[in-house]
Image (cartoon, rainbow, N blue to C red; front, side, top):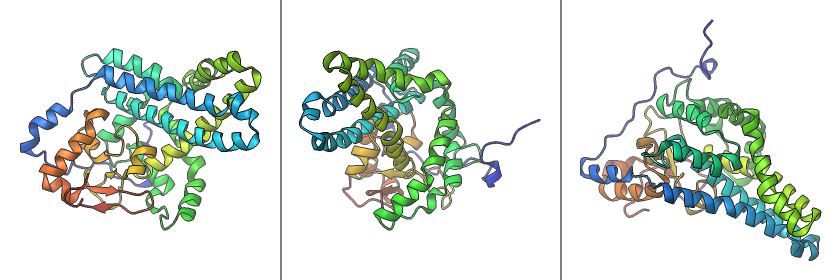
Length: 328
């Protein structure tokens, strides 16, 4: 018996949205060049993200901070959890990069191995599983088979109240449990993959803390990581993903995709070029270290892109259409 595709019960369309954008001929060479991958650069970026999580949590829970009193820990730990969650979010963006073979187009196996070790293990993502789910999002955009469209409809994300911080926060909290369950299901992670972040934490965070400062430091660092992995990371990811599309009022990929280009958005919720989502959907093979430059080239030299792109500069605003002349 054939099963219905995910989201079919929601009455979603069966035909994928058309692209809705024509490549500018004057930027043909710039677009081709933007697809060049650099394995060493992406690997170095992942290493820095990876190590920063460890440094942040070890520093915030160190004996020096704890000996200064509970107030010092109460100040240092939330900041470290937020920043470490941002770095794990950055690693998830590099898992996303790997799903498009954007670590290395020529050495795909090496790219997948490095992405698994440096980005997949700390975040609990299996590259192959994520690739299967995410390429459905691109290839079947807007249909019942698009896992992102399904989550948008089931969580009613397009009706989020963005009129203020409090209503927006309450709306996100009400949806958070269902969102996280859906995320884990879409990842399709095996038990071992789900356990990898905990093993990673034990090896690179808890064990060094135990060896350097004893059980107290190891326990504090481990608890800080749990808050980061189980609360901070999913919260940042949820805010980021809830800002990326407007399916109901669009009938093309270009019209249904939102770029999040505000400074705070790019720094916190959309690291490594993730905020330039329109460019990504037009050319998924452009790696993170080239996507911002291509966005600027399009703004400067392609009027249809500049005048019709959907974007946000703040989380608490509805998408706008068309960037002003000279915008970044």
